Length: 130
Figure 1 (tube, rainbow, N blue to C red):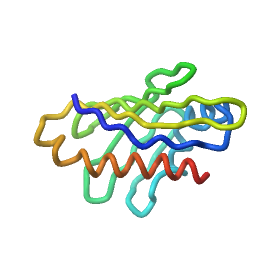
Figure 2 (figure 1 turned 90 degrees about the horizontal axis):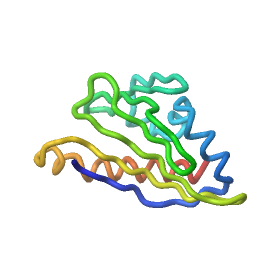
Figure 3 (figure 1 turned 90 degrees about the vertical axis):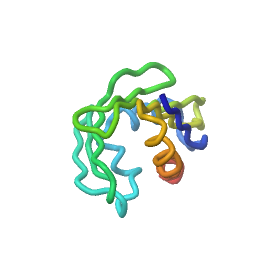
């Protein structure tokens, strides 16, 4: 199992607002670098897209609790994974981080670890700018 964690960013919204935004997978499109994404499709509890030049990705809402929403791979993906959307905060601000866990061989992990880390950092950064 390969784990990749994004940077932590502070969002100027309360924890409840952050959870509501992340819970609806239609909202993830707003965080995506659209110059690197194509074929975006989403519903409230699932989404799919293609990272240009790489494989297609599909994921669905798997579970949620007070500080975490977990998405799991769905459909045809290069490997199985989960993506935890972690958040904790108060009435004024919330700290957000993404944690990816992928079931991939060591060669694949070596090839995708840096691009995925950069991608997840970009998502969190775009959320902080929202």
